[in-house]
Image 1 (cartoon, one colour):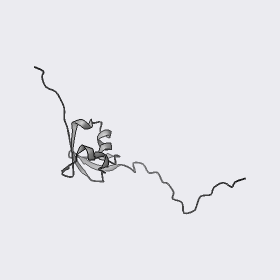
Image 2: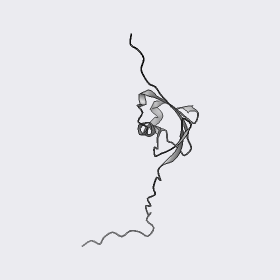
Image 3: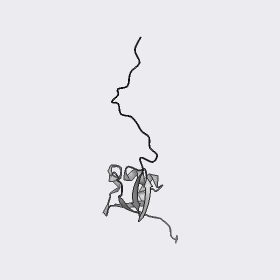
Image 4: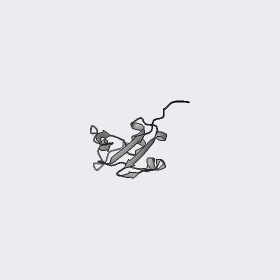
Length: 90
């Protein structure tokens, strides 16, 4: 019969903390608490269609193909422009 595995006294304890993954971001001049870790996740969390959005992160425009690799940090400043179609048909 095998003995039950024992936990090392040095094993890392997991402590859950409410909102531990949220960070403060400044989006279009307004502070928001969000849990997104990448620019792509942020656009999805905000419910925006990525083909209709342009993003400036800390005064630099970020190419759409870089969004999944662009990690966000506490205090980042973003300007997000959402393009809206419309107009009259002739």
